Image 1: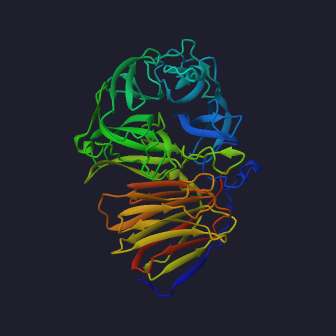
Image 2: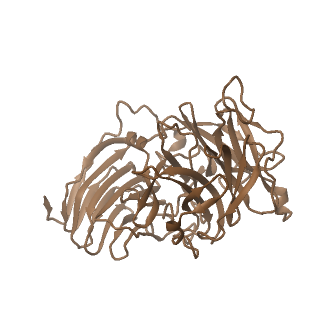
Image 3: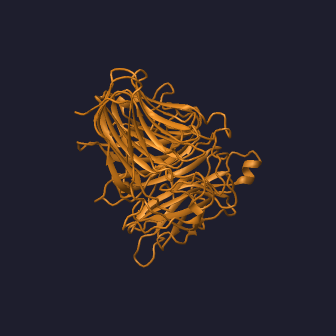
Length: 522
């Protein structure tokens, strides 16, 4: 194995940033400072939670909370985009507008394959959206019943929508925070199941037709963390990897209360019998006394949910989240637009030593972004390994596997000529992964923004395995085959031009490494 004996080894990347297959032209509207180049973001104005994610006839639909008149939160609409590959997105007109019942808050969408609702036409199933109506006047009058659930349907693949004339379909039972319905068809109980957030817990409802709903049960007051309001739940069954066992997963966002401050998403694993969710016994000890199991330990993956109606032959559980945090989302230093989505991710369920756990990895479709890949020579790093990158772009993917060091830390540092840097790595002493954006650029818009974020890990591992996706203003870490995930945004005053692997004067062995330049999709 090659020994890297000199302090700094430099590899200059001269990758061509265009290929024969790269036909997309970067729009003028996507050249703004900090604009993500391969993540989804709105053309302009404010965006937050992903909504109504559903797959139908070759198209992934991404609806989202949208305010078309400002770059800060306002009367919510459902924005709309579609993709055939989860990578390149086409913007479509606004799908749902506020009306006399209120703003259009978060929700979900399904394909009503058997036309249980009766909304279908010409023998084709309708696409049905289930969302929260938020009545602002009631909120201003200090009422508590100003949120309720409504539906709309489409018979042209989501291009136009008709709101159900009998809305709302679920009245408010007297709970101030009563929102964000997620619907799934449960084959075992032969009914539609709806889960929604109700302040500090979730409520389950059942229906035969998506119109008439019956309250089934409540769950969650005694489990997980309640440091903030529960929002945007998602409920679905999963087959445990390498087995025939089925478990149900409940993802539950919370704001505030995240592991590194502000917004985040916790999850639970158990069983669902068509009426009640029962937490798995092994999982219970990890989510009692205000403890949580987190889906992502970074500060910028919130309100994420999964796509409905992924074909059985695909079988994946595909997730996407809002890449921001309510601590600072409305004051980040972007001008024309605000916020982006995370990369699409695939969730899998595993039975680990510590119990049932989700793993999160980037969707395979993202490999199409890779223009050219260079190998990083394996060997012992005596000090620092440096890659000089293209100063005109910040678009890279790194795959790195290290033998776990006996002491110290491994740091991957992205830096620019303005003495700004972002660090991602692993600390043996803390038994944790970390992202440090303290010196990564602009942060005066919010005191809490510049900080050092950690993900403490409880599992055993011989190697330190990292996949990193770097965009102009975001970093996503997938560690140890997806066991640990972190997502952070940042705002450098100029693009990074150097990537370093820093061994901190401790013996570190790189087992394998690649760096791929990524193409723009806008």
